[in-house]
Image 1 (cartoon, rainbow, N blue to C red):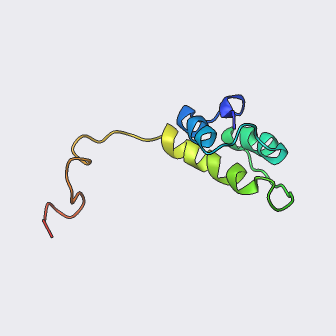
Image 2: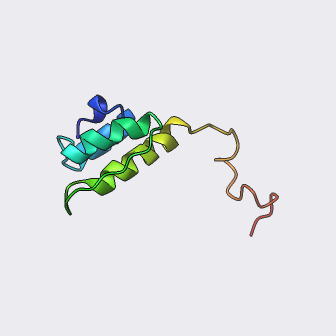
Length: 86
């Protein structure tokens, strides 16, 4: 799915291409851009039309675009447990 036209994170574009998706479906072209702009979307489409990806890709995009690096959190195997090793 060449999501560059949709404005999705480059890693999502690469992942969907690796999965074999080359082009976004009509529901994805219609729904993803306004969702990325923060607008509400209400849509219906047939089973197998790509609704789930149209719903999830913007959510994943948000996680990727808003991720913050917290030094040490990745290095501590029990972050959030008060340093206890269980």
